[in-house]
Image (cartoon, rainbow, N blue to C red; front, side, top):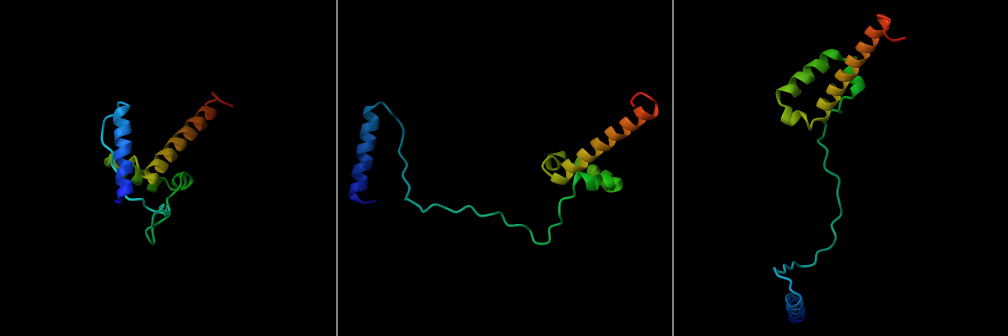
Length: 107
């Protein structure tokens, strides 16, 4: 730190103390702005299966829901768990609508 920088810091601290501010001043060297970089993608990672895919593959959906239900802390952040759960909800709703129409409750 140069003498001028030290003097500036001391002046700012004295001024802030005179205004009733308390606390510490932490300085760090100036750094060039960092460019945001995309997170690396694992090579060969399989694509995330969609809600439509799970609706078309009920056996896989049931298997995925079983795995997700066994570890909900992780499953709540897994896109495939969310997609499988949404597919199950949509299939259930579609079955209820079909049954209501079959019984004449809905047209």
